[in-house]
Length: 409
Image 1 (cartoon, rainbow, N blue to C red):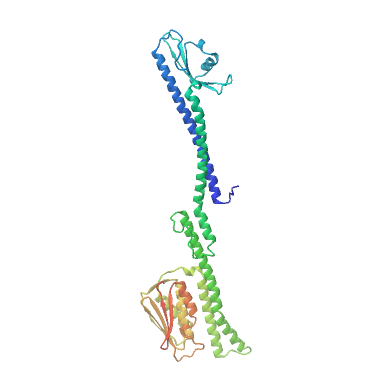
Image 2 (cartoon, rainbow, N blue to C red; image 1 turned 120 degrees about the vertical axis):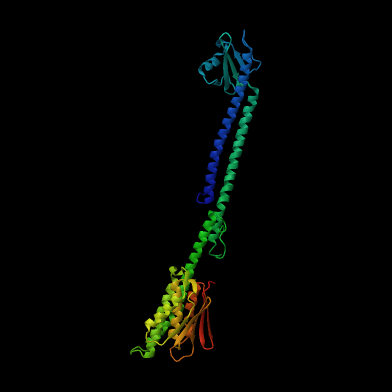
């Protein structure tokens, strides 16, 4: 039993049904063409006999045709009654006689008439059933037509099966690749290099799968980032509060809680930005205004602080990225230099497509838990990774240096 829940079976049923209908139509058309050709031959034989008879007029007595399948009657009274009745009723020049006297088949006649010189009608009647060639041809014609018809039907069914299998093969192979994608994620989907609808479908599925994988990876990164980055400031706050359970916090403890809170706020902002799809839309931007705005935010928040930032960035320096992510990247680096550096300033410069952040390790400003610009470098790397930038963090000759390569890697 054919299961119609598969594309192959449905295509086979559709092609087979259509093929059989077309075959039956052409079989019937072929039969009609054969019958028409036979009738034309019979009419040609009859017309030839009529032409000969006209050349022999006037006829003075009953005329017999040398052909046993043609009879000539010079008057209606000489025509056999069964034939005469049909001649009188028929106006098409042909008629059939039903089976009589155990005849093998129905007799088929065609006839014509002419008028002799005395105005009397002469009837020429063609008994096709007596034509020897027709006796052998009829049986052969039926056998030939039925054999060809059966062969064509079988051929159409086989062709339908092959076409159904061939046409459904791309879909079946693509479905198989999609089903195996979880175990072979790097395998290229079938048909992705085709230029037809199968190729478009494969490309769309591959793009959708890549998008889903990116969403899953971003979710995994978000979970890892939260676990990695939020625990440290939360632990600092909890430990500081645990050490001062019943009295007011001292100046140093207040600074620790304040810095941990700021770091926690900054970290949450970065993590949420990395988790949002809209922040992954990139465009070409000028970097200097974003850097200046980040530094001004520090001064607006701490107007009395002694923190000098030297900005020597090319005004024409442009990079492809998301403005919000670039702002968070610069904010993270500048804030780290402000909150965690024991120096009173930092330097931001550019060299071609490179953006360089520097601050001194040694200085007169004492800040607890100093780590220089290396603090929070995991978040910096995550932001750069999302924009296909490269980060190089180094410590040389008393200077922490972060080099950001803004060219797409």
